[in-house]
Image (cartoon, rainbow, N blue to C red; front, side, top):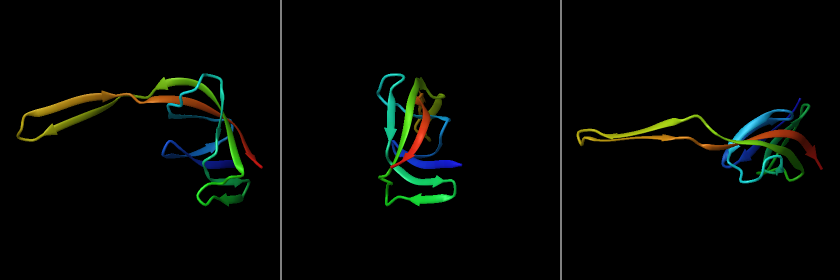
Amino acid sequence: MKYAIVEISGRQFWIETGKYYDLNRIPTELGKEIILNRVLLLNNDGEILIGKPYLDSVKIKGKILEHLRGRKTIVYKMRPKKKTRKKQGHRQEMTRVLIEDISIN
């Protein structure tokens, strides 16, 4: 089983080929290929490579499937004894990416 741990937009994801992941919005067109190069760790069928901080020889190819919005989260701020309340909703803009290939140069 081949997997990698990748840093994308400040978050770390455990990534395997053939699966899709919802990342923060990537401003590109649908169907376009992207290359993820901030690979922190790679497990190639038991052979583990660890980057310092990144592995330069590993490239991950992904394809953009769709742009969507995440679930709504409620942000509620209240100051006690001051009668101030603020209720606000937030939906994160996301991009669904299909991981096609993990290649080692």
